[in-house]
Length: 163
Image: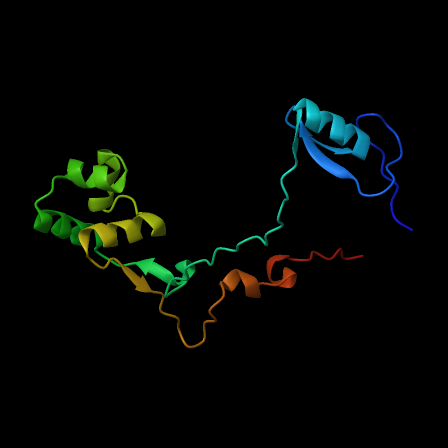
């Protein structure tokens, strides 16, 4: 039949409907006798009914192009410098808005380092310039990386002993 429940206060088998109550902050299952005693003394509160709500799934905003299909253009440092100067900002001001160090911004503008795709997108948004472009694929080249097409036989050279 049903599951046997025992009172968490006195330990007796609960006959009939069990009661849920908050006793000193803990939710307990009680028999009718213990529930009535605690309610009269004011030491317990009726347990609130819990509604089980389905989890809300946040939809991920899709970008127009997947990140791995974008690349940084040639001459990106010059474009960044022109965009910064058009706004009348110093390197220190732009670095602060991008949340990077001024030294890193100087290296990016001089093209000693390439910004990550995430940083490049932030630069595009703040300066309203384009430094990312879609990756161009050759006709023979597949969209996946070429390492996916390498087989074990392409890498290993088998040396055979001559007897």
